[in-house]
Image: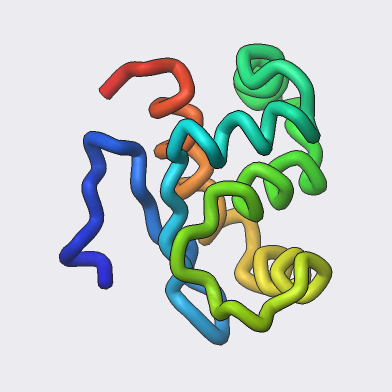
Length: 104
């Protein structure tokens, strides 16, 4: 799956114990995340200040998930992210935040 990633679109892989989940920050995904979390620019600012909450990161990932197992609940997804740890989540988060800002 990673061979089909398009980094220019901000796609990233979140590796969990049970799956490699592609995160694709499409317009629709980011609109859904913004509807739940508020301004994405404010979210980026909180992240830059080290103030991003785990629940916000999981919500952003949830809305951006592209090929997650179809039967996974949001609660189970959150547990997968937590079990994977911040070291696994940080590269994917960075990729999505860069895409939000429109930088490469």
